[in-house]
Image (tube, rainbow, N blue to C red; front, side, top):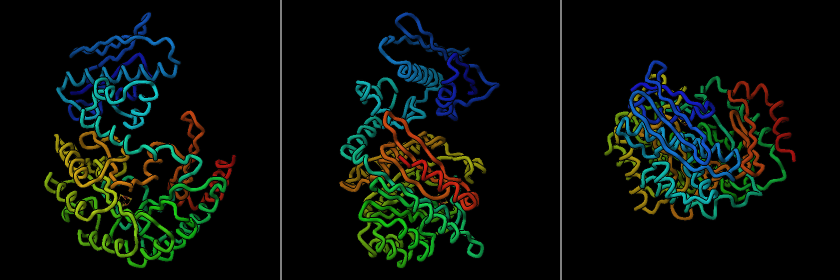
Length: 464
Ligand code: SF4
């Protein structure tokens, strides 16, 4: 069904269109399609929504709370219009979405917002926003698991260090990660610039957690990896290094990580099916994953995370189940389950790969949740991206006491982030939801050329 949105609230138009996009492929936006008018009228003590087209109509009235600020009124009006548009599209297509009318907001953020507004969050998610009972429970469980962690130690800052180099390009990847060219690598120059970048960290804040990501930081040689980790100079705080590609891990690099006080390593299989690994451009074997896991376990007392993706090309429910079951049998402390998202700039987007799931993504995600629950893993952070199979979510699971602080902090935006490296984004929080960001130059070449200018900017950014 081809539709286009007209509205008397132009500032909400993008978000209204997002609701339509969530119904793809049943509804698609098209300027030649049926016009759907989404209006909101303020009348004395009520506001009225009217969603109408040649096909159908939905209308609702809500009381106006006169004590609400203009900002809050805007928030409420947007919720009304999106929810009623969702109902309109649901009636038109017969399709229910797991996250109902939620788009453009992290579900946990909304949960916390509702609680602050004095609204019972679980009931509102289910009854007003049309979130399914299972996903409502999931969100509530995450909030419960974040208790005592969320917003603790806000006098401390987190650190992020980006190493945007990989051995090859995964077909779902949209990061500006450079494929390593052994003979013409600018890795050494990058590491030099990165070490200077790390050195401009604000001295006034203690560190809470460190995350070295990318890219694949373990693509660096042991010497270069050692230089970066030495510059970070960890002191016993949570310290994650991503080893996204298992074939890049060696005993020597693990020894470097141990000596530099890394506490958590992320080894990311994505799947335990060889044909899929070959199809998505990973260029490593299933055996490499077991080998890497074994090396990490033998090399020190690291916590381990493993990432997986639902709906990879050609995978059946049984393939995905096998991956999750195998991961559980290895007993990593954390398991993260992503929904395949088709992102601009990825090979999948360029080749118009269709990740439409017709219920399979939901089955995979539900299986992961129940199998991980049985194995003692609780969900502790989540986020949603655009264009995911089944419009689902990414969820981090952890064994008891093994929650990654950095993941909670970055998702819930509770701490300053001191970020180094190409494309890294530093954040300063000023209370009342006010966040300032400073983005590094994305491309490696630009990052190297403009390093002095950017370092000065960052010193100023973090100055009191
Ligand atoms: S390992 Fe990660 S950063 Fe590197 S290409 Fe794959 S998805 Fe992208």
